[in-house]
Image (cartoon, rainbow, N blue to C red; front, side, top):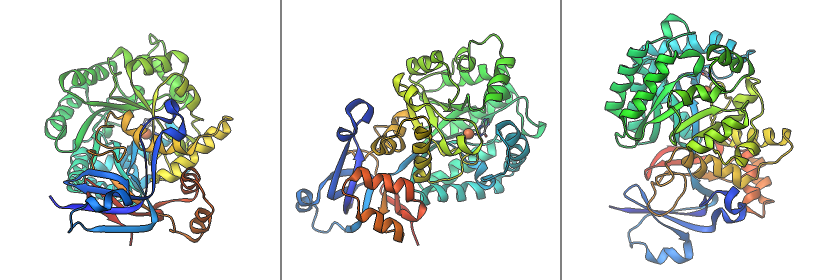
Amino acid sequence: NQEFAWRSAIMHCIADPTDVGPDNAYEYYEDGLLVVENGRIKALGNASDLLFSLNADTPIEHHPNALITPGFIDTHIHFPQADMIASYGEQLLDWLNNYTFPEEQKFADADYANDVAERFLKELLRNGTTTALVFGTVHKTSVEAFFTQAQRFDLRMICGKVMMDRHAPDYLTDTPDSSYSDSKALIEKWHQNGRLHYAVTPRFAPTSSSEQLHKAGQLLQEYEELYLHTHLSENQKECEWVHDLFPESKHYLDVYDHHQLLSERSVFAHGIHLCDLEYERLHETGSAIAFCPTSNLFLGSGLFNLAKAEQHKVNVGVGTDVGGGTSFSMFATLSEAYKVTQLRGENLNPIKSFYMATLGGAKALKLQDKVGNLAVGSEADFIIIDKQATPLLTTRLQRSSTIQDTLFALMVLGDDRAIQATYAAGRCVHRRQ
Ligand code: GUN
Ligand code: FE
């Protein structure tokens, strides 16, 4: 039961900036102290107030040129697509056929899946991401590999096997029955096993029959606190295809709604081309959207309408969507999020960006009592950001007189080099060389 302490500038969000305003949404300690015991936050405050209360033998790490924040939360990413990142020249449907499906075929092999899962998780940790909602492939082996590796680091992670029974190559399709029983076996083994959770994961409406979507809904009924993770309204041609495949549905979201797939643990990636009825239904059901700016720009999918989602009080998290997305870094992702809002004639407040990548992401995943900030009692998932990681960061941040400006410059200029160390449940899981 040894306690450990970190002394540094410390910042975390305590509320939604959209509700309380950016200035009331966070706490910042210029010379702060973070105290951890048994993998949880024991105390947080000004160093001058807390130092006297530490046990005499408590080790203190002092980082005068750093900023400690909660670990980042990535609400949409594909682990099997790690090695096909930066695939040239296509939009969504051709990109899937030409690059994604052939890559995902390899995950039938357990050794291959294990190797990628391990490298994927290390890459997330190098970028300061400690929790993610993750797609596997159609193969059970892929999710086995992912959870096995995540458990080694004791990470809070959510993953699921893709359900896909049509409009994909034979080597990558399952059936309604096999997807149901394979998912069930994975749920029994991994859901709520330590810090792991399972997400029922139909790829998207075009690749699941109505019968399969019905099975997905059945799984959600049978177990507590399962997630539903899928794609929604990302690309114009995809939307037209869904309209043709499900002519009786009012809109794209209605396909999922009709199969009882909307709940407060449902996360829909993208949600770019939505009508008002869809935003309303997302709000009513407490579902969340994963905003994936680097992917939306890279695949030419469109500009997410954050203002609309806010007006309708829809939960929004941030996703890298690697391999459609182009970076594992939440800094890079938030930089592109800022540019997307600029193109829409708005500008994303840096506290709001940071919120979406931490506590807001946790809220989207209904994990806000566990991770997402550094409140006493929460799990000690945090990162040490080096404010002098590069010459340019050093000089730019010397000019920052506010934490808002520091965060903004980190988002625009920062990358994995700025992540000095990453901690999960109080344990160091990455340290920069
Ligand atoms: N829609 C269906 N499958 C995928 C995928 O793998 N990536 C993205 N970005 N969109 C999808
Ligand atoms: Fe995706």
